Image (cartoon, rainbow, N blue to C red; front, side, top):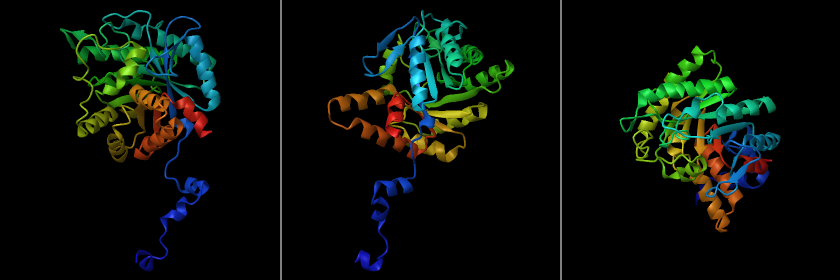
Length: 326
C-alpha cells in the first residue's frame, strides 16, 4: 500500500554504494580537526607506557619531538600538552616556572616545528602535592586566590610560544583573569580554549594515573560540574564566552552528546570536545577482548561526535584516526 501511494520514495537509493553514501554524508572526519594529547616528563630518551591506557605513553621532551614529527607527517597538526613536573608542592610552583617542564617542552617543539599548533593545559592539579586544581586555603580550594596563579601560568606558557592556552581548573572567572593577563603582557593573539563544561566524571581515572594527579583528599565535585545538570553547562559556556574564550569545550564527550548538541545550537564559537582517558581505555579494553572491531567503533564514535556538533576533537586516538582517514 505504501509504495502504491508513494511510488518514488526510496531512501535506500542514497545508500546503494560506498561512493554514494560518501557523497551524501552529513558529517566527515578531517585530520585538521583532531588534537593529540601528550604527557611530558623530565629527563632524556625516556618513554613509559601508561598501564591503564595501552598504546599511550609518557615521554621526555626529546621523545615527544619525535612523536610530534611523525604525527605532523601523518596530518595531525595540534597537540595538547600535560606536564609531569620534577617536583610537586602545595602551591604548584612548577606550573608557572619559566623553566618548568611545559615551558621547556613548548620552546623545544616550536623551535623544531614552528607550524605545529601547541596547546597547553592550564591547571594546578598536575603540579600540586595535594592534587587539587587550585590553591588550598583553610582546607578548601580557594577560587579567587587560584585565579592569579592560573593567569600567571597562562602568561608563562604564552611567552614560551603556546598558540592556545586551555584553562581546565573550573574556577569561576578564570577566563577573564587569563584574558586580562595575556592582554596586559602583549599576548593579545594567544587563543583561549576553555574547558567550559567540564563534568565531575568517573572517566578520568587513567588520566590521573598518567599525570599522577589524583586528589590526596576529598574530590573535585565542588568545582567540576554535576553531571545531572545540562542548563548549568550552558550557563558556564555562556559566561566563558563573555569573559573572552575563543573556543569552548565539553568534557567528557561520550556521555555528554546532548551538551555538545545544545552548545552547537546556542553558541557561535567553535566547540571542542575531549574524548577522555576512560573513553579510550574502554574502547581499547573491549577491543583487546575481541568483542568489538576497534577501528570501526572508533570511526562510528568520532563521527557521532561530529554529528552532535563537535568542531574539533581531542582524542588519544588522533594518530590512529589519521591512518584510518588516509
